[in-house]
Image (cartoon, rainbow, N blue to C red; front, side, top):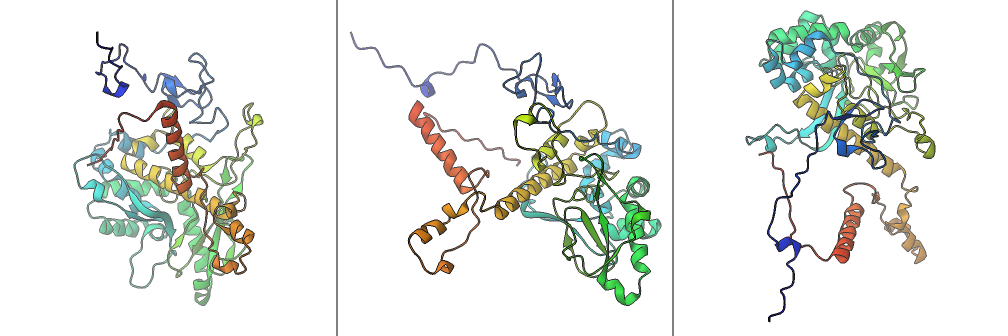
Length: 426
């Protein structure tokens, strides 16, 4: 009789549907016992059980704790939830409405090629993404924009905004302007800063600034904004002096100087631009924020709340309606997430650039070999910024993933099928 045929490789066997279909469950089946975030059952930590789940991606098992975002004004809530008569046109143009009332401009090259098809909306940028702020008075011959409009008479400011955005609903524009003038803490701050600088002699107004400084509160997860009455410090110079802290200070200038970037580690970075996501001026991440002390945190040396931890906490939906505005903002929420990712990535790159000695980059870029070989002219040995393998997407990280793949093939033999999947928004 012929010898039995060898078994077919798994990749060549006939496919049969599994007896039991995997069910991920509903996202509202479980909530984090520490922060109340909704989760799928399989997102729990491996050391926890279904009856007593613990989660790490939302609050690091209780180590991350941030103040609850306050409820947004009623007008904005109705527009976002679709119960306002003009909700449809508002949500369709929400990014443009936000830009019309933002204090800072968005500096990015937006890739619109992904929107040419009929797929879902996608916000994609190329290169660096920044927030920029100009002086409180425009250059001669230019129209007022962004923060410059908040020091104007409301009727004049509304007219300028409507002329700049003729496709937006004038009734919505009127209501949003009244809402922000009433609830935003930055409107009176900018007005007071303008009044202080206008009192200076005209020849000094091009070389002075007002510093808005964030002081630490008693709660290390909060900062204290100055009130309008506390803004009295007029700073000579253009705001580049050594005593200016980019992570705490915003320098407002009367005129001139062009556009200047706001540091992505400043807590005012997000609320000054995303005025419809944070209409009450809720401050964002700052480098001084710390983790909460728990039993788990005592077993680690990390005490700093990173920017990625902060964003992960904010974008997890939770019980209650306090923070729902963030998730109902549609295209604006998508832009905020992309902005947060770009800011976090830039922050990580800055750390790598400033800590080359910590990661011992000289072992990678040839300096150590040059010294060992006795090269006299070290100026000929190039200096580069080395990205470690822990940085996702770096050449060393990709090489490490390749080596891991080869190790899997060595243990389980080479794959029968190499399958790639592409999610194309078009």
